[in-house]
Image 1 (tube, one colour):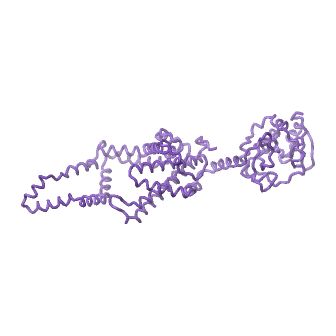
Image 2 (cartoon, rainbow, N blue to C red):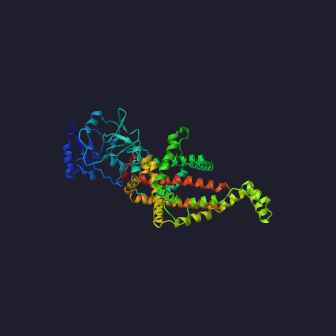
Image 3 (cartoon, rainbow, N blue to C red):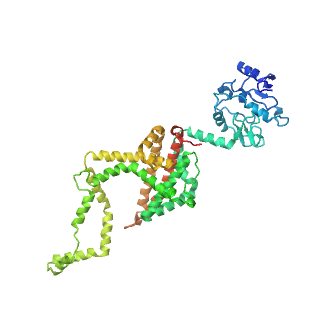
Length: 493
């Protein structure tokens, strides 16, 4: 018997009626059979008419398959007495018959299933039992015992369609729902709390990073590589919808290119594309390419060095043989200056006078050409505004040429729209809070400031804060990209 001539039964308030498939479709078109009425083909299970795959073309999509998440199936609704497994003649021939007819063209089964899976928390037959499978057509959920298997393939006992793993479909639906929620302060809170998901990793990473910062140039270079590696790991994971807490590199499988050279190269790219214009302008003015009314710091240093004449043996002989009292005083002063302790004192005093030197440099800067100040301010504004995007491109693509190409970042900002500006504002908040805490640490730990070594405890605290804020910012940028995945064409499933 063909699928069209097979006997169908309809259960409604007035009783049970039999007809063939064409007659059943006519009843549906006339409105005599509602989507909530129960139907079955032959000896198969009863199922709501709106869920029967062969009746999709008869019902309108909105009537047969409501996609409103609030329209859920009651897992505890009453079933007729003959819904048990006994006496059922579900065979492979019946399953093939279900596949004969093309599905309704205007119906998206995957979207329908994803819209309902978040509300289906129990097995269709066993309330309180977590489902193992969900039908890919009618979205009915079943535990492992209630699922029909044909050659180890999970099949829906109600409509005969293939089943999918419930947990996979649910996680996919949750990720899609998160993406469509929009980017807001809830994501900001998630980003701030993200590093604490792995508290031991956060403590170890912060301590290790801070210690490396105190180890000279090589130590700082390694610290920078580790920090940027962590940032890349976080952005890559969060963009794909994974918020697991493993943000540290795999030190057991260390590779020089992937774990050391690549992070440094990407960091160099971020530096070039953000503060590169400001550095070019500053170097041009510093070297005199752009004329200034006052000598540059380099020129002042040369003048100071030229004024400091070396103390030769001839000078000492003249002072010794001179009978003038001024010569004796000058000789004592020069001898005192040549002592190692006196040299160290002068170096310490110069370190304390660094603020005055910085003020001199600032005054020299503003004495430059009138066009230079707007250009340097514009370059600095670009560095501040574009840095989060450069960091996002570096962490997600891990491609140096994409990082140094500002057109890639600007196009990404255009497509993200307001999401990027929200992320940028949150990024500024994190940076301001981190900088404020670091300044407070330097004030509180000021008594530990030592000549030549500086304030080691404060630098240690600053390194720990930098490590934490970098992870939080990476998570924040990853969430912004994740919420814009549809606009950016990013695959997250």
